[in-house]
Image 1: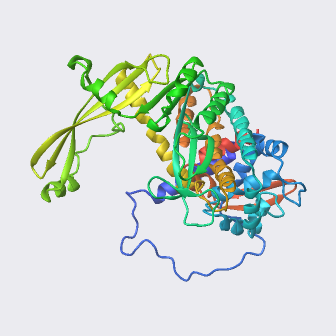
Image 2: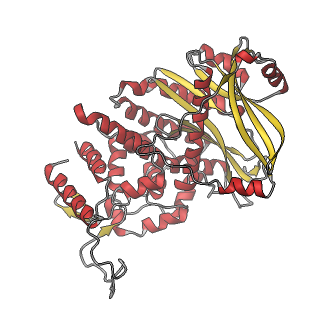
Image 3: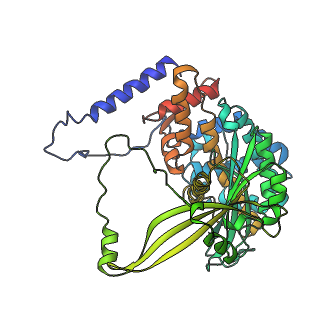
Length: 509
């Protein structure tokens, strides 16, 4: 950023620091909220926009070649009157980035003259037209759109200057039920837990949190259905993008033994949970005592100041007082042995975790309970305890699925067929990927600032979607047109604008 902008940001930060100074509280005889005699007027010439960051998002999409790639490869409209395919796709993503939670919220954007001018649009599709666009998709068209996204993300990856970025691509996989209260949606069915709707399958890159592939299925289909073919696609994408090794990671539903030999021969590493069948539990129970080692757990965070005493466990006290059945974890141990699944032609490492639990009622211990958890892998360089840690880190994908459901609102079913809802999920999930690409595009200055910039990039990749929108998209601004320039003049300051301006400057250059 230039010196003038840097000075303005510093002045705004200085003013807010002065107001928040705890040593200068000012008048404390009355409440802080003292505004009165408030009036509203309609501006004559000045025009404002609540989501000023959407312009930078649009510049990012254009710079990455996303808009041109969509129009070049996705052909669903015979005539453009006036919308192109990219207009529809970005309409879904921008609606989510501007805090829209459903198709109907597009109408708010469509009737906002300043929003339309901010994106240089005469008009954008209304909710009905957007739903009709979803219904035009076939499975092949959805695959084409996802291939476009993957080609764009490869370009983003190639711009990364940290060589360690390409050491290992960790690909997580999981299914998620998409519930619907509708009764006439084609392809919906009842799931194992009684939920009516669809069963989405999501492949994500744990390194960056990007959604690599999304597959929609009927609600009663198993989690692993279609997973192997999707895995083959995204592994090819990661290798073409420059990653030297690939690790596949999933729970017990994805330990598909018929594919393990093929993946191992192809040089893919895998680490899957494995069902605790009686045969495996018998093998684990017969292991000698020397085979078991204590399983330490890594701390959830590092204490930055002084450690604090843990507060009283109110829930535990009530459970004991009312003599509810209470299971306590006493210890964890880990061991390993070689195991060859029936569908495999060679053995693999089977890591087993033994959890020793005590079952009590009130103060009285009833009995001990031993449970086993198994992981099958072809990774040879890590110790068993390290493999357990790596496997447990897959739980971060649960947070990603929660963001796609509650933050982006991509895993919903607002349209009337399986394929149209699938298309809606893919296009709306683009908002989440744009957040990741925003972080990856942040420049890293060499020298003493490099580590700080990389830490900011990691922090931004881990942000929740709502926090990202509040920090970098929901920026009140004044919209001006001067000469040939469309100027977004920011009207407020927040602590993250230094990062925002660093990316905006890089995009302009």
